[in-house]
Length: 171
Image 1 (cartoon, one colour):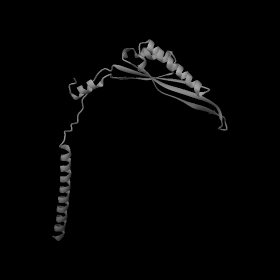
Image 2 (cartoon, one colour):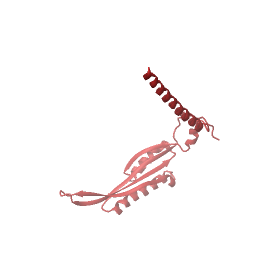
Image 3 (tube, rainbow, N blue to C red):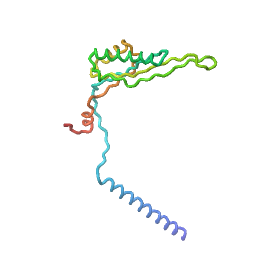
Image 4 (cartoon, rainbow, N blue to C red):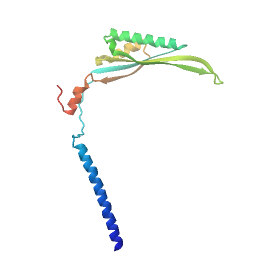
């Protein structure tokens, strides 16, 4: 029938255009890939960490921003001195951030009644003595650190293990 011939010609034209389009895309893809090889895979190497980072927070509340900051600075100094007495190098003790903000109390009309200031300082202590992390945390809390956040464990040189996971020899 004439209808079937028209539909067949249109389908043939459509398939030809589609084939030419896909052929062009494939050729372009092949040209881009001709310069190298892409390989995907997963390698796993399990190792014991050799570094512990202890994350601590010092905070204080006082009538002025300067007084609150002075209290946190005092705690930072006490933690630094205590950690150095325990054998940690000064360069392995770091204040990551410090800030002060006002805290208001309001009366029943919504008017500010009093203002105090809260100061925070985040301190990190890095040690290779991972078996005694608890002792460092205890000492930091004893000298005034107000919050023990967590301990994160890592590797001093992960590249060796990364290369092992890839199956590559490192010289």
